Image 1 (cartoon, rainbow, N blue to C red):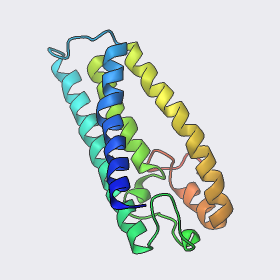
Image 2 (image 1 turned 30 degrees about the vertical axis):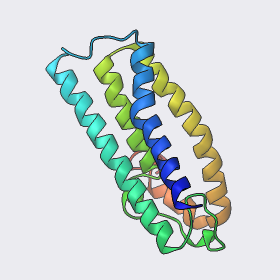
Image 3 (image 1 turned 135 degrees about the vertical axis):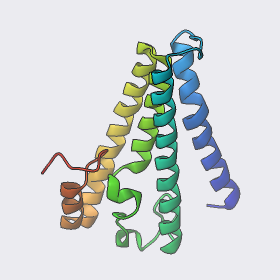
Image 4 (image 1 turned 90 degrees about the vertical axis):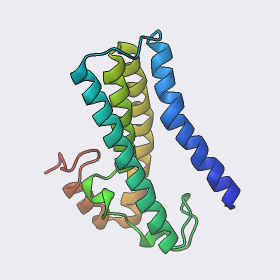
Length: 165
């Protein structure tokens, strides 16, 4: 994949994640006034938005660094694809740090908007993401076997702890 395509891909993903989904939440919520809201509600919303963005960006940067180290592109095109199972950095916290960050980010907007429509958007987002995660986890279990099973045992999908323990 050439540099232009990579930049375009990351730009479009960023726009969808940072602009389109929150805007969709706001539109579906019938455009409520964004301010004034309760100070505690605003604090919780900003905290989750910030925390989600930071976790997401850390995971993206860590993944890009590791993939570059193994000369694997973000689509996994390499003969060394089996070699890398990310279990360190943000992936030590949870198995899906990018998605966890995205959910926290969007949940911050839900709290800020305080409408059922915004929560409906995040529920739909999570449902679609879970379909992708289930497929990816089956593939990883097939490729890495017991190593991935143990990683799943000790690390939660979205939390620092696994519910399987």
